[in-house]
Image (cartoon, rainbow over all chains, first blue to last red; front, side, top):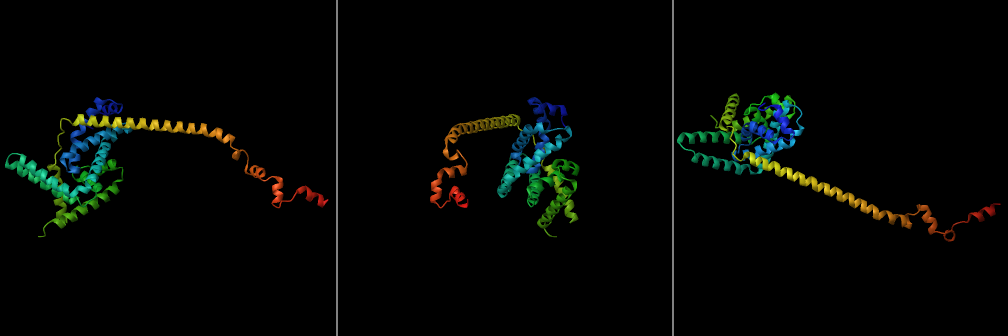
Length: 189
Length: 111
């Protein structure tokens, strides 16, 4: 835990300063997770605020300190999922926007190496996003939580409140699907 | 397939590297509190409106009850049972005209 449970208890009882401390402790981590789940940097803050807004209005439901982090993860997953669902219809234009934005960022950054790094990151991001495009929003998030965020099956079980075996099956299918797309997109040797 | 499996693992790792935890802007907290306040006000207004709506509905029910009760007490249609109303509508002679039989006459014949 990044904060003492006492701090969370204070926030729960309406102490705004304590709530501020909780937000400040988890903000960077949550924003990082959101950034990797939604893949759109300019909307990360907005989604993160939505997560903390939901946290503020649901803190009174928290019973034990052990469930705080999985619970915060669940709020993050839900807010990211809601965001991705809203963006679904704009998917094609989204990819174009992202490229344009990355080009602008690359132009703005100084030096050739910085540009190369930026270009490489953009390529990685676009490649994975295009592979993930074959999955539903739910499966994209689940697979990224496991493979990118590095959450264990036990942790995922707490976040999703679903049995480990069911998660394993779902993860396996999602990964196989991404692999098939990856294979089909790669040039034949 | 195994080759792609490894490549995919590398891609996931590269993705993790490519997207670092971003820093929040300076107005993150003020904006968050604005949203919290906006929602709090909205919920308060909604609660207030629903309270007013419930009170209005209750008042309308009471008013309706007060208006309907005296009317129903004076209404002849609901003063008695269906049979009472029928008996009143068809007096004894009227029943005879319709082909009814007088019971006292019947009794006299039998004796």
